[in-house]
Each structure stands twice: as C-alpha cells, then as structure tokens.
Image (cartoon, rainbow, N blue to C red; front, top):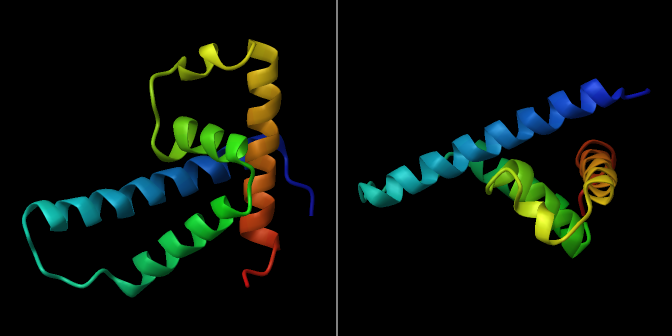
Length: 107
C-alpha cells in the first residue's frame, strides 16, 4: 500500500489530536482530583504512542513532540536546523513514526 504525503499528514494530525485529547483528559482528572481509573483504551493508546516514540532517535522524537504531540512555538526549530534540513528531517520522522506505529509488531 502506498501512502501519499497527504495521507501521512492526515494520519500524523489524527494521532496528534487523539494523543492531545487523551493527555488533556488525564490532566483534567488529576486537577479536579477525580479518582477515576484511566479508560483502558486510553491507556493502551498512550502505551502504543510512547513505545513507538521509544523506537525513534532522539532527534525524531523531538521533531514529533515539538511539532505535533506537544506543540511548541511555530518556529522552535530555527535554532537547531536550516529550513530545508528541518523539513527533510520532519518528513523522515513522520514517515518513520507512522511506519513503526502502523506496520511493526509491538513487542
């Protein structure tokens, strides 16, 4: 199956949005001191995302966290990369993340 750049963008935004929702819900429960157990599906999803990230390089993790999972300022990358390097590495990080998440068997 061939994944187009548009499909990759849609997938990474989907996972980022879902991840942020789960994290937000978890923080809310902690803030209001609700002693509810986290939904098992939320737990499994967070585990899957964290395990997938763990398989990536530090640089790939930084790109994905800062751009998608826990977004920083829009131009956070300027002190680390040139524009072309940033976009090249970001594309590779997204590609690798999605490949690990959707194709590799989690051990």
